[in-house]
Image 1: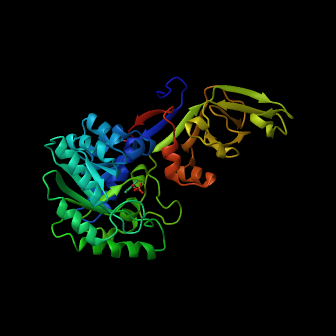
Image 2 (image 1 turned 180 degrees about the vertical axis):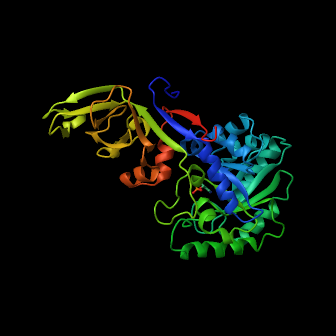
Length: 376
Ligand SMILES: *Cc1c(COP(=O)(O)O)cnc(C)c1O
């Protein structure tokens, strides 16, 4: 499904805020740090190629994606920077990465051996750029022992490979308790001790590490994700020392307005019944757009005022109580600022018992993305 352009509903992506967020964070990082912009999952719902273009203008060293397909989309869009696939790519597709100069994460010697066979059988000329992933405690992918890492590095001397990077990922960099982080850091350092010639990119920092553990980054590359989009990776637990500006808003316009009379009900299950006469607007957004049904009972913003959602959120529509009669076409902010009120992705996440990442990445493809630049 293409995004819907004919319902006056937009995910508004503020590229000026994106620029603000990368510039402020870059200024706070140690000198010689580089940034990989993490643009997986459609740049956390903001539109991968549009976001990557701006980050390219801001001088990032490269991009991180989750999947090879995402990397190819960036190459097709003409981006020339390093592109690293963070997940493990099945060996059978890795030749496509080599041909397109896309770097892959590798977490085992067995994978490298399999790839070498495939590459030799196909007479591939271009070496595959490899980042070795190290599991220091995330428990997801990667080498677990320094000795295995050393063996893999040795194997990477073969002409089928270019040893481009080495990295790990922290499980608790967004937590006030540093115990587990310190344990991972110690393990990371033990891994680095067996790396005699360091590759071009050495990276261990996600947004949270970049925000709260700057002193341990050392000539490193930061994989910056959620903080680029103006969200706090820790939710509320720890505050960034500088302002991050939210990049993403969701604004719709009412399609129907009526007076609901006392005793009349709204939506599936008739769970809401008006206690008095009131004005009700219908909005053309629902859980199929990623505005989750669990937000039933929450509110949206109209003219800087909180307006309750009435009854259950439907697949494609929802109803709200207006403060007074307002015309069809009135704007309603589901995520973002209206007057002095604001609904952040973290607010929506709190309501749903999840994290702001899931709110942003859950914004559906059906929602049209509109790009603005506050500096315009
Ligand atoms: C998604 C991801 C990131 C980005 O994390 P943020 O918390 O959004 O900064 C960095 N590194 C890896 C390995 C990831 O999977």
